[in-house]
Length: 356
Image (cartoon, rainbow, N blue to C red; front, side):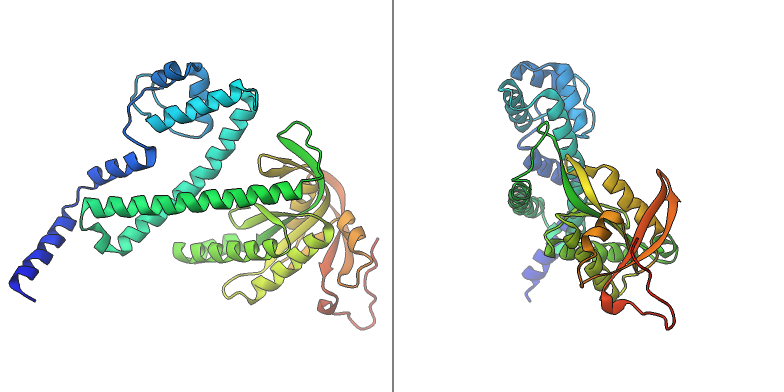
């Protein structure tokens, strides 16, 4: 290595250490927002002919930080998005109520996604200091990463939308925003999670939850089900029928049993009518599945009467009745333990419980 080359490398290190991150973030923001902040909220309303109150309401429904009337906070991309939204409403394709619900759900979904992706970008840059040698290099990396993520998100969204349309092809939609259909609904909960949080590091908990969510996604997708949402140490899934719901629950137990580091699950599954709205599910079937999960034990699956009736004639499942219990909202909740036939051990001299 020559003396000149050594000086050049030292200068590069010095430049990296002196990187003006505020300037870098300003440039990245311009890439993300499609240009510099140019307009106030009132400017947007005036240029699109929209009601300033409605504009503020839509902004809040997306979960974005509030902007004062005279604060220059918006870009040409914001102006274009608002104009397109106003035109959609004017064409009577959606009403104000549906628009508010839609923006609220999109905002909530993407807020979580953006938080995770932002942390990912920070982690990547932190573990690769060679990317921090100049402002141009950091901005180039961020621009390329943004384009890749944007392409992936649009692709996944289109595939999920096509899958949804295939699922509900024969369902009558009541009001364009919600629908009711029969389904199997299940909750899978990591047993002893509170205790685990007390004796595990943050990194260990993150690894545990990542492994759990990944395993759940693989199993649910394999049976053409859908994960509605994850709630900390619990996943809520739906399937088209009782058999698919049972297979998901049983395979989840098996998968977590062989996955190193994953504790046992408690699972509750119920079948019946389900109201779907804005990507979530509601109704008594969902409530029963939740109550069954709270009654379940580590490594157990509990199902309701409708599930038990639907599976009763199949040799693929073993169902043993449990004593009905009172839970919130249900005075006597009848339930059955679901297992594979080969998993059941019959105690000599005792008869297996018969299904009610």
